[in-house]
Image 1 (cartoon, rainbow, N blue to C red):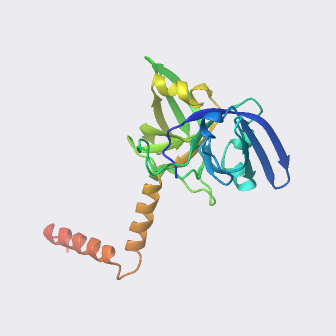
Image 2 (image 1 turned 60 degrees about the horizontal axis):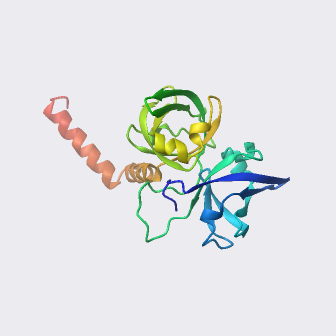
Image 3 (image 1 turned 60 degrees about the vertical axis):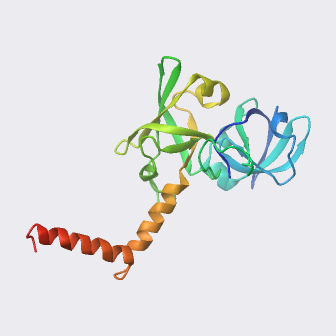
Length: 232
């Protein structure tokens, strides 16, 4: 579990590809490796990955399975790219972002960038929904949370019809994450707020079946409204 508060920017130093995926080697990461152990989880651009090897000089390795490469933009990274890094949340720290699993849902494309004083406004578009990845728009609401490249951000606007959403980066955040450096047409990793997913599943489950408790309550309320309106 993560908070979406980026701790450090690492650098891609090497990529070793084979048929089953690839090994990503990240350097310049010493500030987050002081308490690292083999098997620890580190969110890399928002994807929860397992440390398979590391050294105290500041380099660590993670394995990218094909599923990870298909769901994220990590397969498009090249040597020299910077990456947002966050260690798994510790129980004794302040919780300043939102609950982030590090399970990337899909990627989105940057449509627009514009300055607003010292701040930066960015508009993104989600891809067309597919059977494998249904629409994520139901989980995006103005002033709600979204994780972009591992960063917990607040949505400033949502357009369901166009599959777009907007965020704003203050100057401090621009300096601490990679998103401010990305340009129109670039892809980013998206994880929607998992709370919305659980709520949706619970409501659907409660409404299913003729004898479901919530369904019975809804039917009763509708019947009472219709009676008051003299419709039935």
